[in-house]
Image (cartoon, rainbow, N blue to C red; front, side, top):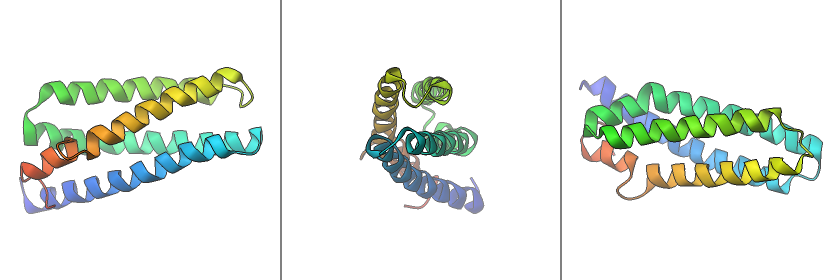
Length: 138
């Protein structure tokens, strides 16, 4: 892997980590929203942020993860989890902000995003595995 590719992987991990913080804050803002109008705005921002985040992961990070680790099972599980979240995002985007089932969908989305962040950022998580393989600088 070239030095430029290693730097790109490092930058991607840094960007994804910042995204995780921002996305978690957006989800918290949904629960704190004082009105349906504000909830809808937060939902749009959160769903758009997740779509961009997942595109970066799929197009850059997961490819680097697979090259670095050869772990096809974890790679596959990550992609399947992304598809699950994308399906929930579609349901959320179609829901009325006052629909009680929206809260259940958001709880599920929150749980999945929290799990996603944990799997990526834990000590032996996806990010650490890519760094340990020398694909990027720590």
